[in-house]
Every structure is written in structure tokens, then in C-alpha cells.
Length: 255
Image (cartoon, rainbow, N blue to C red; front, top):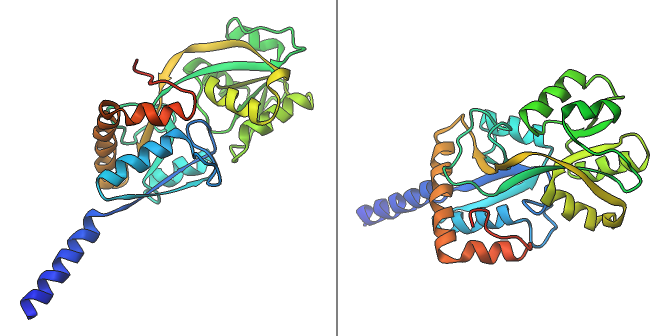
């Protein structure tokens, strides 16, 4: 009897070790990830849920400012962030498989005459950027060099409604141009009923891969990065990835 009890305890303990709650944080960035109240919650959250479930894990996801999310994951307080470029989270554990592509576009109100040609063209406008975001090596350098000058760079806090706040800067004439992922911009402008008041004034660089990025402070980070990479391959081959993306009007970035 004592042996049976010990065996039961051992099996329960083993189950607890292998069944993890994986904590994920990021700021609101639909269609990639959204607020907790959003149904569907963003395709990256659906991917994380589906992959974790196959291994007996659960996802605990919340939104928080991007800078805080990256800092917390870097320390190991949370496991992963979603929607990260490699330049957003240097030193993190990245899966081999990406979770999308991000192309940064520049957007302005429809009455704006300005068009982006190169970095020098920023000299005549005030560019609104979101704190902690990485856009491109060239633009990041421009922001860093001019962030103290509100006549060149307008910094918007990376709260849950960061892009909405950036659009508000345009409407109030406190900024002239915003930079944002083209998918996120389209989703947000539609949500704000601003699609007919905004226009694209250029794109920056080439599409860059997006990832779920996991903590470098714990072996869990590498473990989960590998799990999500293998799981992405399975989602794609099974057709489940296409089903998830279809909800958001998106197609597989590898096709």
C-alpha cells in the first residue's frame, strides 16, 4: 500500500513537472495578438495555444507595454513575448520557425503631400514612433539621434493602444507621419473607422520575420522555443495554421 501511494505521488509530481503554464506578454498588436477581451485573440496567441496544448501545457497570456514585456522576459519573470523581431529582443531564445513577416509602412492623413523616399526625407516631417519598437537599422539610428527633438521625433508610449495614440497625434497635428507594420495599421485604422482618412506614404525596407521570443534567463526559454518551432511545422503540415490565419484574412507567409 505504501509503495502504491508513493508511486501515485511520483506520477502526480512527474505530471506537474511536464505540464507547464507558459506565460506570454506583449502589447496589443492585432492581427498578431490582441487584448484579452478580443475574440479571436490574434493569430499568434492561437498558435501558442494550439502548440502548447499538444504538449499538455497551457498558455497564460496578458497584454502589457512592450518595453516592460521584453524586460520582464529578459529577467525570467515571464517566459515569452510574441511579435518580436530579432532586433527587438537581442539575446533571447528564438525558434527556427518564424511566426510571420513584418513590413513597416509609413502612414499619414489623406491631406498630407509628403511621400517617403529615403531617410533624408524625414527632415521635413515629425515622425511618431512607439517606445521600444525596432523599425529598421537606419530608422532606429535616426530615432535615437533625434528622440530629444519633438520637431523631428514624437515618442508614443507602448501602452495597449499605442498605435491608436499615434494616430491621435496625427489628428491633433502633433505629428505628421507614423511608422507601423502594414497588417497592424490596416487592422487598427479599420477599428478606429479611420481607413478613409489615412493613406500610405511609403514602405521601409523589406519584410522581416516575426517570432515568439523566449527568456534567455532560464532553460525554459530554449525548451519552449524548440517546442514552438517544432509545433509550427506541425501546424503548417496539418492545415491548422491556414485555418487560424483565415480568421484574420491572412495567408501563410511561407507560401
